[in-house]
Length: 193
Image: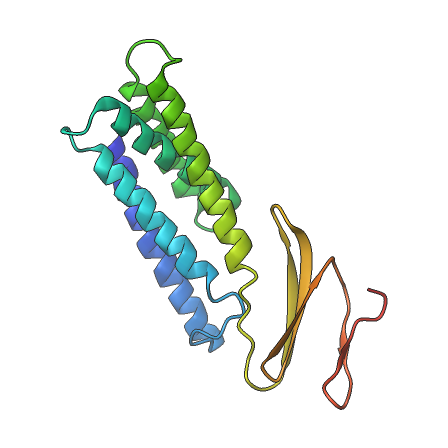
């Protein structure tokens, strides 16, 4: 089950990077997307999850360590899979289910032991790293050197935000805004925000 999950994660990562590359090529965005750091974060996160799964296959590690590694990988895959359900999520949910099955098979003895508590802690850490990564990378906006653009989002923890880029300058604002305008001198205004 762990091997299957590992192969699915690596195949999904490869497909994800190929799709992102083709979308950027089609849109003419040679690395110029405003959220340029989110894709590398997701790719790196998937590599770490694959490394956790691969490490959990090492027989020389103790069962509690292998349990913690598989639990962290399963939690990360399931949460990322649900968040990305409309893009790369389905294979990640399947891989997460397989990693969960492998985790359950790794359990030995009573459920409430120190090793199972460490495993739960590892799962929490994996999810916290994922959510923190999304919170940080979606706010690392890359502004074009010329022209104007804007957008926004809704953080998992920090709530809504919006931003404006004018000639390479970033203005970042908390809250939500549905409209903005740029006057002739390049000043951004947000009527009704």
